[in-house]
Length: 318
Ligand SMILES: Nc1nc2c(ncn2[C@@H]2O[C@H](COP(=O)(O)OP(=O)(O)OP(=O)(O)O)[C@@H](O)[C@H]2O)c(=O)[nH]1
Ligand SMILES: [Mg+2]
Image (tube, rainbow, N blue to C red; front, side, top):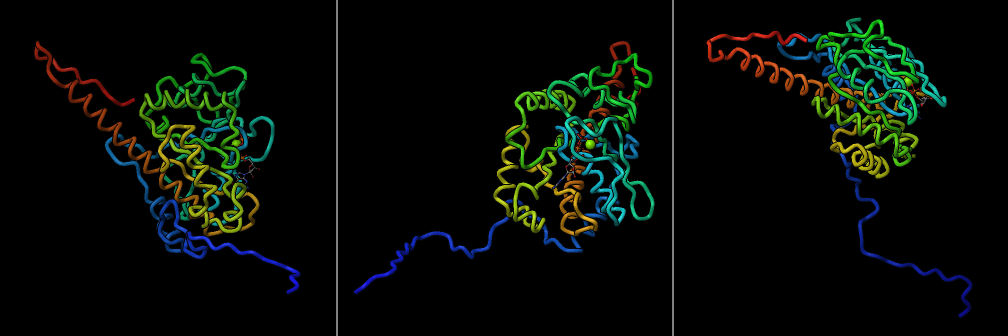
């Protein structure tokens, strides 16, 4: 027998290739109805309770160029029904965003939604936001539209410094914005900086989440179809990695693909972005409930008569 070509095949036991992939995070089926539900949940969001808050503030923090401003543009686009680019974005060595801007999103009806996405200057190792300035931001001491000075942090003598912020001017949820493709490449000093910020957030009980952006650049399957995001092993491992770096539970890590190249809306991109927003509103809501309980407990103890029968009713309006 003359053999001109020989092929050897190996049969191995294992998973069938055509078995359906299991998502690593479950969501309802992605369709128009789901998009509508998410939209309605977000439009109807109202910060509950006696604090009388009209809206919650979500602070976006993260390294330069990770997609903070683009995320606001993405959400605004979804509610506007067209691609919108109110926040300036792009690539540069230093942050393109230079001021503290609380952005409003409006519903189709024209009414402002009850949350503000607060955009900030990108974090850098050697300059920009430091721990003191971060503390001022969280406490609402930094005025809206304040132009950050990368060399010198704001101080209480600064004109416009808010000495007595109202609860509505404080931060109710922090969103670290991290690029999925470069999670493992964040300089150690920058991780240290974020971890030090987290210490004061934890101390104040402020919830933190991570927006994992640019998932399209990290995974080809997601680039071709955004709804593959929760099937993608690459995105799952980026979620695991960032959860380890910032010490946050995995369900606080919210992957998104921002609108950047698109000229029209895409339901799948919008669904992923709204899923993140709804979760952030839930976190902010939880924080407000905790705050309310804390304040009413303090009120109760303040109203307890002392040994002489006097009561001390301090006002908790901050
Ligand atoms: N492919 C892709 N590009 C993105 C995504 N999000 C943002 N970009 C691009 O990344 C670049 C930086 O985005 P920005 O929104 O300006 O980032 P930023 O965090 O606000 O940056 P600074 O304000 O400079 O700190 C822009 O060119 C965006 O178009 C995304 O999800 N996918
Ligand atoms: Mg920006």
